Image (cartoon, rainbow, N blue to C red):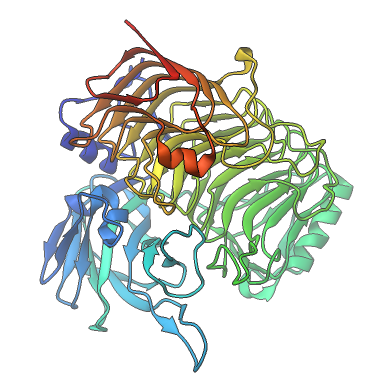
Length: 604
């Protein structure tokens, strides 16, 4: 059974989530979300403000307000060098992450479209009123734009803004201690308003040393200075390590790579010095020219940070840039762990797009754990194109412009098998701005449990849809989709980018295939922006909801809604929406069903 401390007032819950990384449980209670993450969050709601610093607040997820994308829908803004935001620290730490917003800027020449290029502004970090560091904020990677009724982001500045926040992280020379005061001030009066959503601080371990039986890329000529292209040296190290049965070690430093980093030999083991110390920096902004691209079995990549220059999801012709932090077929029994990825089209995407046809069979028995997927233009992680028996766990996914976590049973060709029995557990998915926190599209027997989805704008919390082509959901009840022991906080939307109404749990049928055999058990839905459960369109059968509690639902909106109407008929061509659902011990004070063909049963 899912229990949470102090579940008395919604306002208390909101504060707990923002300040303790969702680990708000006693030792004897079940943990939800990425509770093992080492950082502590200090939200702007908890901060002290000084000077002319102001609060921005938006409690209604108004897409026109930047605060709609902030934690608790509020943030602090610094205007002059006299302004500050500060926190009293309760733990020792030397690693700091700041989530910020900074105004965009435009670049244009006569006759050209207006493009988003961002701006820079410096902030000073003080500890106990002593300046310890100057940090440059850059809005280059933020600010995506849309036009009305079109879900594809545009390369030019247009009507609707999204992704207005980004992050920067850095190490302090001397750790802060319990009782210290961290203060942030602007370095100069540059007329740029600097918004601070939160800071996260953590104890960062010393760089990992070279393991036994390993070869260092430095011995093969890698510079690690962020300037030289180190790919050939890394490639030479990989070839030698595979031949000798050794590990590839990448020491602390920034390693510029100007092409795909292809891992196409079985058994490659790449070990960094830690996600705060070893950085792979992809400098090529062309299509399919930036990624750690697997096409082998028994691969391992661990303990490093991956970022690059990319700032777009799609080209002007709407083709995808296909810059994904980690992608490809990862064969049999591979591992991705302790990796931090930022600023790609997608964080991790398992499919063989870089090889046509794929050289390896679809990914199987992949383990992805303890990763941070931040500030993506599309999905955080998508187990795709036949990926099966794989696990994504103990990870944080934040600020993504499509599903934070997804499994899409896409078919590269008619023989591609369905995705089967993937597991998503102990993950936190937060502050996304499109689609859904967690989305399942086709396949068989997937499980989602002990996950937290929170504060998404323009998107659902957990969704199952038949929107996309591919292998359908398995019709065998023994291979049902199962969602268990999850919290969904402030999710759903009154209007996504298609102007659709989405629920915190959103079940959306379509022409592709029926949605059958999906069960939800022990779910808390807190302050949904619309319905807690929304079921609409298509053929949706044998749904099961057990022990689902909807707390603080939006005023005037039904807790549970099952809908069919003329709009759905004209959009999807369904004369009648068939289906069935069983609700057992589910909040149902407000229930709406405009469909005589959909069978509903309530059980105690």
